[in-house]
Length: 337
Ligand SMILES: [Mn+2]
Image (cartoon, rainbow, N blue to C red; front, top):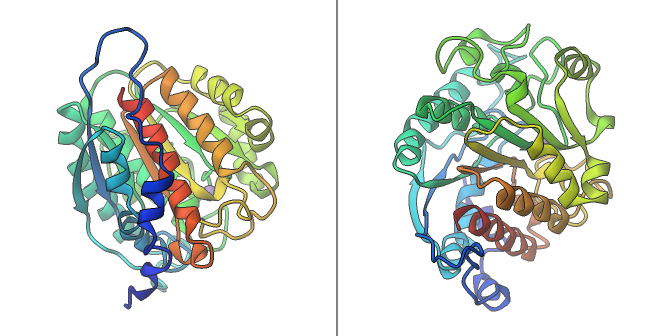
């Protein structure tokens, strides 16, 4: 397929350089200059779990808009490992309620396999999706590390707890955490793809930014039944730092993964997400990344994964990609120092 529309908004990386802060990220106030953590970047250019093609173009769009240069310029030791297998969504008429489940599973296994050695040597990993299902590949790699009970701060407008039985659209990108928890009705091939038992126990996840109006009854029933940790969109918008502290405080103390679905953002403030329903609701880009930065300072994470960014959405507002990159740099710097 043509990737021509990737170029939208990518010609102004010089603007990023002029607006980005020029000082290196400050070290923690211990008075000791810490060793800079190596930052490893992996792209997962897949839209197989989407409603349509588009998210597969996000890693290239972020790089073209200057992501790597912005991280390097902030004093970080950055290693870009390139992209995993490119997958473009197409209708899967053999599995209408779990579209492209084979491709999705292969992509996540590939991600887990590539990520594990990077995490094992102590790198911080920045994973550029792709779909929100990448969080499963990240948590699979974290589990293989065996560094204690890992934790996932999942920043998303949705719970992603649907199953092929709870909805009719067949898009796996809002079924990922259902499969991580191995909820009833999930596809075994995906739920069992990372080894025995559920990939995650309910207490290992804290949701931040959920909008109750877009949850399904099935999802609300699971939240109630399992006693899941949820901090809602209204709380995130009213007090980003407080909401982040609440969510992090709910998690076990092992290695932490941060994940953001950009559909948590008010689409009019930051038109980045595949989902265009989030207009004039939800936190701004700056509020959301304030929360992520506070979380990263409170408990330095091992990974940050980005899901559901469709670069065609900001073709008319290319600067939003530069704002997004500046904020990603802020979180990575907070995590790495
Ligand atoms: Mn979402």
